[in-house]
Image (cartoon, rainbow, N blue to C red):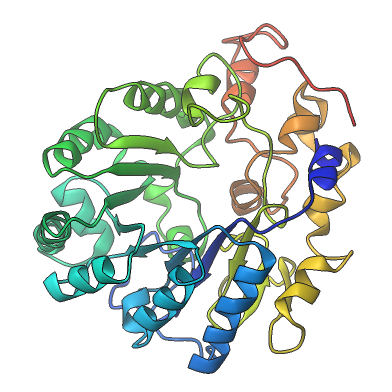
Length: 374
């Protein structure tokens, strides 16, 4: 699979850009320990120059996040600069401080969507956000944005506290006319590492995967998307992947191949979720745009080696012997590293859990034929 990706060419089509690490919350699951801005965040001229660099590299969709991105005073200027270059731009916000004026501005300069973070039903959401009443304020922000004709999405990190609430939450999102809902597994990095009561167990994927597959099959809105750390293979695999895609199954982590993450101080990673300085890790930072241009970092033959120079010998444990190793390459890099400190051994895999717990035999699960090495 990696050979095919090389022949297609590495292009950062999807980018997640942390505009600032400043945040007006202190959520229990925050992987980046957001709160204070980084002391060396990009200046406005540097940020606007980065907009041009991203367009020239071929970025097609950029998500502006944080921290809380709206705490950066020039976030609208950055968003407009990207939209004016033909890039689809969406924003992830906690909704605190989001009002009608912000919704009007988002519509005026053409945000593709505004995604609000929601962590479950009322008691769960307020517990994780540590702010009493934030649940009601968030719905007010969502309704105001929908009323102004801006497409609204919701992002939820699935954890042990909200797992039982997914179906109820889906009904609420439908009632409030939310367009789409992305679900992803919460991982024990940052603040969530300090809250083990939230952390999922590997066997929880045996419940999560079929439930997400069922939610994706429901008609109408919100359209449910499974995050890249939910799967892989098994009888529900095709149901989890985006309908109409080129292939109906997981094709491996795209960090540094078609996905790019940028921290607010100009650090470049293959995926923004991969840990860095705030978690005492530096191995996933490929460079900084103040020292080298974004193009130089992206096109360097030594960048993103964990994916671009992948070999089967890197894999460990079950992943190394798996029939789908060549395609999967260990699943989501962030999830594997967060739980094992090893990007190459991922226990949060549906197929792995069905095999290890005797629910299926190796090679006898309804899944795509293993691909031969390219």
